[in-house]
Amino acid sequence: MNSLKSELQRLALKEGFESIGVCRPDSIPHANKNLISYLSNGYQGTMDWMVKRANWRGDPEKLWPAAKSIIVLADSYAQPVDSLENLAEKDCGTIAIYAQNKDYHNLIKKRLKRIGRWLIQKHPNSEIKVFVDTAPVMEKPLGQAAGIGWQGKHTNLISRKLGNWFFLGVIFTTIEIEPDRAQNDHCGSCRKCLDICPTGAFPAPYQMDARKCISYFTIEHKGPIPKQFRKQLGNRIFGCDDCLQICPWNKFAQQSTEIRYQARAELKSPKLNDLASLSEAQFKDLFRGGPVIRIGYHRFIRNVLYAIGNSDNPQLLKSVVIHKNSQNEAVSEAAHWAENELLANG
Image (cartoon, rainbow, N blue to C red; front, side, top):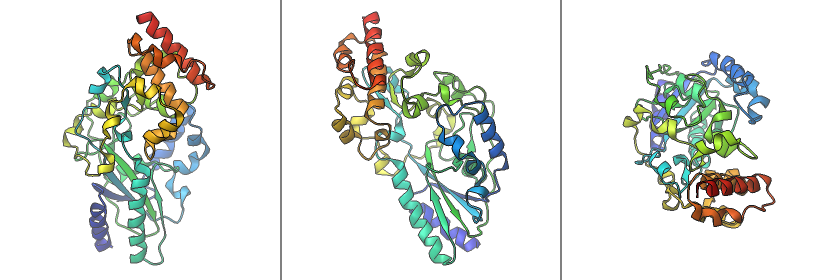
């Protein structure tokens, strides 16, 4: 079995993954308790899907009782940029680094399936299931149990050799594979990720309240964003990288070699007036195959209008008024809010 694991590690690296680890389905006994606490506090906001399958999410053994091993793989998307710099460009939008090109779900799943097919060829009577962030699987606790990294105070996984700029893919298998040693916490007394959060979304280290998180607001939340958080959005129109960017462990991050993760020039710092003028067809064409398209046209325009309202640039008023009579209530309300902000500061 050690030979299988060595071959598996070589194949994972050949497929482009930067790190691989293995754990048992019973290796995260604390996860269910933490999940119950998270949900009881209402930190999930309107993400009801977290509640519906919480029994599977908190216990991998319940998700698939036949599984004997869980393989966790890390795929770097690190770029040679500082995502905080674009926040000062108020006439432009800021899109989370991971979303400036192709959607990672499809890219990673194809590679996981190739590794899975290889495993089945080695063990013809075995079975596998692959997951990439769309199933009731707690990838981050599993990643820590498999030795990939540790969950930092911002709740994201951190690696001593990758920083925190990486995606996770998971393979459940009925094959017995020697597990790796769990990773220890190396955050120490650092709290930079907590202090930089614009909305104070961390009620305590290692806890995140989605109801105050900019990524949640701009991606998951439907309808108008609460007014008390709109100014803190700044020019962020999809996601927020602040707590990731500030992490000191990123000095060890390896730049991604996957060209489809490298930012498209037109998405690095897009002009807000150009984005606000997009038709729905143009929106779909611009973001086709990428993560941004998943939030839909109206939620995207809503985000752009909030960013325009925070721009302090009255010249962008013409990009706002065209949406005041939108049939979408969130868009119309955002347009009126942005107009009032621009006129007040004009």
